[in-house]
Length: 588
Image 1: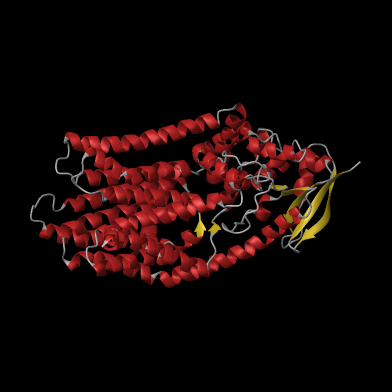
Image 2: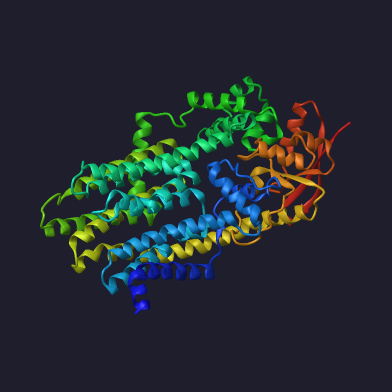
């Protein structure tokens, strides 16, 4: 009897948990789990102690409060891949919470089985690539999307206390997503607000004091959590050294992400020369190896960023640019470049219309029957503004566009569940589920094939980087600087090679270069600057790939020549017949 009661009370949670676990088990049989980009690898290295020898929360990408918690976990047990495990669990717990809530709208056994198929087909047909190649930006979007759906589908008729307690998962997910990837949470925040508005409109009396308390307290807790997280972050990066680096970081991001042509086109060489950058220094900026030159600091990058804003088309607004991006927006919405995400969202709009009409025709109260129409229009306006912003800024990688699709789909799915409840027990209310599952299943073979291809490509790219890492471990008394573009394409497996000892190598540029942690790492090996270490210390080398046309190390010689120092570049070793180890030798 007790077992039966336990099952009846928890069957939705149990069925959803089994669905998630079975899918994870099958995915792990065929695929490995990777950090999607080297950015996540660097964040892991900082928080785990690989970078400086001591776990540290200053990873520059997450807010400090989250970074310090993860770094503390590495201090407790460094052999556990805490950061990757955190990202993975955030994704799976978010999907679990969505799955359980969907189960609550499925009254019959066959509909619950259908929901399990819906969730499984989504994982394999849509989300597989992001599940096996995990990235913190997408993970933040997954949490925000789950929060949107959970908030929209909160039960009606709750007291203020019950409403707030019921939305604790949503509150936690939003604040955690803000800490993980602030920019992504802020990008989708308009959709979070829109979801809140749609849910508010489901209340009996819109401006009733109790309703104002429900939504006011909930949004107040979220905003307070975000503010507290940001204030702690300001305090953690409040020192003079960190403040200087934050300026350097911001301007470097601005130049490389939006105005890179200033460094590479040659059209702006005269200006760069006028601010004291000779040809060799300009090449260091172009090939991202700016760590070699200490004079390239936050002041230099601020000048370049200011100049770029005024003299390049980059992010400048114009009617021609607006029309161009509008055409691109329409194309991206309707064509297969973003499939299956765009088709999932388009199918979501269609399903809301189908079920909305059915709900309107069966609504006995005849109150707000066609509300879904203007809600869809409003959602379309919001998504257009967000997409045009992203396109006009020129930053539309899949980790951002897919994230926008996920958040938008969460709103649509919330609308569907609300309408399903209005339709009642009629089986036709589940037609949208069937249609969406069909879309997911259609893309399942493509999703699996592309994920296999992606993992093979990662293995090929990573082979060289793993060989470099192994070579450096075998030479612990030396230190190695890596040419950025020779090694920048790597990623790492999350649950393999969890050796978190201090490494004796670093890239010659990148987003942590010239940070306080970067100089702390140099001091660990008796170095003050990269320039002096390569020139004066016999146990310091740099690594480059051989390239199709042989070794091109002229930029190193040109840099030192610009300082009035004549050097030769001597090859001292090779790594897996792909990379060359070089030493800088000063000429008499």
